[in-house]
Length: 109
Image (tube, rainbow, N blue to C red):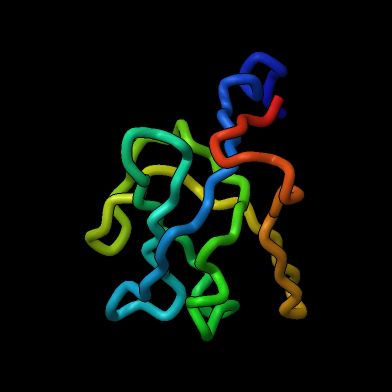
């Protein structure tokens, strides 16, 4: 269990995926470029490759991300956030996507 104060520290924000590419020599990892209405897009590594055989299906999607994690190097690639997604043991998968009226850069309250 975490405290409510701890939970309030987590910044959840809407980002738009601008590009996606497989990270070489990995089965699951993608390098995403994501627009959060900041000065420049952020690079985020996510283990969702197996759900998107055609990476073009990710381009333009607005999803929810945690944006205040410390940067982390994953397979030699720096990641500056974390994508929210759900999966089940039987292979069901879903990105957490806001409705179209919510603009990029909107933070969860």
